[in-house]
Image 1: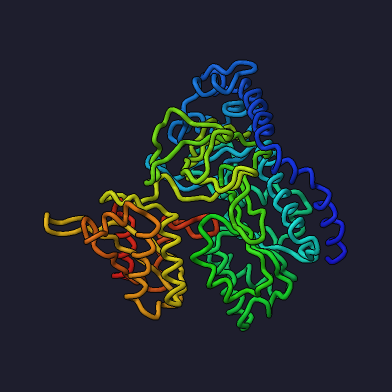
Image 2 (image 1 turned 90 degrees about the vertical axis):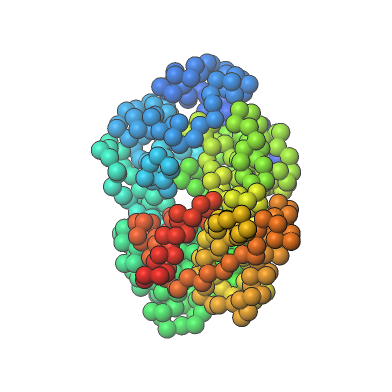
Amino acid sequence: MQFLNSPIRAYFGYRKERIVSLYEHALETQEKWFAYLVRNGLKTKFGHDFGFTPNMSYEAFQRTIPIQNYNALYPYIERVIKGEDYVLWNAKVDWVAKSSGTTQAKSKYIPVTDDSLKLNNYLSAKDSLTFYIELFPETEMFAGKGITLGGSIQKMDMDSKVKCGDISAVLMENMPAIGDFLKAPGKDVLLNDDWNTKLHLIAEHTLNENITSLSGVPSWMLLVLKEVLRISEKKYIAEVWPNLELFFHGGVAFEPYRTEYTKLLSDSVFFMNMYNASEGFFGFQDQRFCNDLLLLTDNGVFYEFLEMDEMGVTKTKTQAIPLQEVELHKNYALVITTPAGLWRYEIGDTVMFTSLRPYRFQITGRTTHYINAFGEELVVDNADKAITEACRQTGAILIEYTAAPVFLDTVETKGKHQWLIEFSTLPNDMEKFRKVLDQTLKSLNSDYEAKRTDDLMLIAPEITVAPEGTFMKWLAMKNKLGGQHKMPRLQNDRKLIEEILFLCAYP
């Protein structure tokens, strides 16, 4: 496949106008996409119900359409699933992407249109390669193949006229031929709906391939790499795939897994941070030594932002702001309007801008994943950073974790947090691990620090070590095995952690 590398690299090298657009014309392109989306919305049943008008201004858009969550939009999505056309978008919809559930439904179904695939998903994927080649102009990535670890085509939970799958499976099913050719192994393996079988087959079918790139959620990709090493009886991945140079990762914070990856992979592998969700592709890393994400402002999506408090709760549900009004180092809930027919849709992720020229940001957590049982306002970003530091200082290697409050039983009893953690390498000093975790949380979060000062409301955290394989068993029990699923990191009640603790007690 060496013959393909130069022409493909040249193609992406000639796309420098995309770099200029994303770096220099963010606000202009947001205006362009707003107008395009509203024009299409005029021709939909949603647009009719909410009074879309030709040349609708942004101010009228704000007044007319409330911020939507999944439950608010679901009556329209249900009509799409039943085969009704032109409901949310000006087109027939053939696919929905299955995502994690809400309080009212077992699963979420996100419409996927031809326009959302072309204008967002595939364009964004091409842009990520354009930026990668700008960073590494001598890349040999296209001389080999890539492993994309994702989900599968799935049955619907109801009678349906549309096809359904994890977003990665939908993308694979609709991928242009050249992209399919550059993937390994074949779709029959990558789309297998039995995770354990798929894990083994991916490893088995790629041992003798020239694998140059990986793409997937870090926690799941680790399992593939370990299976490759087990089958090959090698110690390092470079002994199996000497030309591996790139890992596109996303879905969960990478830092808790970095130590394990640097152990398995060579120093030449570049870890490229991606923000690609069921609802769309919103950002990727554009710098070599900083994993902040470049906001994709010219890729079919119109963005708005709701300011959050430190706990990750929106300060107001009524007044979202456009991109030009965001400020540095403030926490915002992301609101999107897309060519899949998601109108002013609050996706559930929180972001913080680290640069405004160009617009770069970090994902700071989820609006539903936090602990605030005692006023400590702990968010996922705090937790990921603290557990990473505790691992670093004690030589521990993380597999997975979750945390929840332990509530006060009596007036005299203090509350605390329980951290349930699965390690592949235990800390060399568990008490030091606990102290570093606690101290780092204090340094990151003033509310947590206040509640921990003199054990005012919280005593020191409790660390519970889960036997290896525990989180995998829980995911299997929930039918959530596979590359699209992520472990909830923080919960404000004990329902989830008690389920997993039961598995620890009765394996």
